[in-house]
Image (cartoon, rainbow, N blue to C red; front, side, top):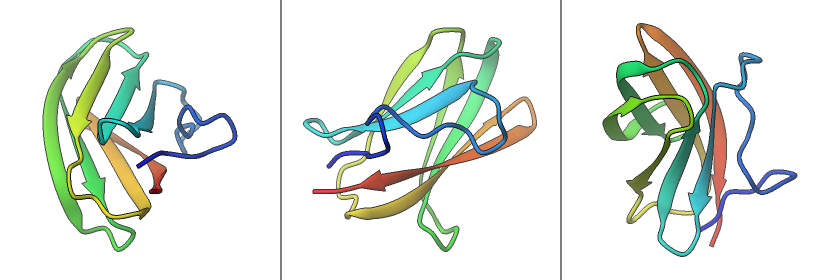
Length: 99
């Protein structure tokens, strides 16, 4: 499994803010979240298929420079939507999973 974009490091946020990026760790089948925003007590991360159906949901605390890994076992190849909700604000990104 791997995430692809031009640099293979994640896809920039659609809202124009560079507060977080996602990628997939191919060897361990984990979703990797890199966060560069203000500290948040608790955030919710959702993995959705392209129809908007939530496949997995995780909660985590975040701070500047945080890197979090989330298990994605059993995820099939395809395009997915990643949504991050912090302090009532929600932003989304897309990720491509390949085998």
